[in-house]
Image (tube, helix red, strand yellow):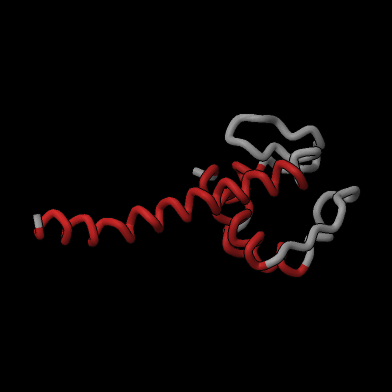
Amino acid sequence: MLRFLLVAAALFPAVSVKADNLRRIDYGRRLVEQNCSRCHAVTSTDKSSHPAAPPFRTLSKRYPIEDLAEALAEGISTGHPDMPEFVATPAQVGAIIAYIKSINP
């Protein structure tokens, strides 16, 4: 019984970390759906409705995904010409980056 408890205790942090990461990815998905999906394809299969808006699933081909964190935190204002400015909190930036990584090959 003691061996089982020790194994369970060792595995619990990994389960907790994975659950936290899944919650973060889900939060990022909801943020981009609310703020970006009007123009950008934000899933792994949809199509961007705005011709100048790259699909999020292809962003890793254009930029190192981690480099987007600074732009999100400072406010993206240089996207396509009619893109609204978007400024994210640190928690939102982390969630958006985690989501984008989850859909980029």
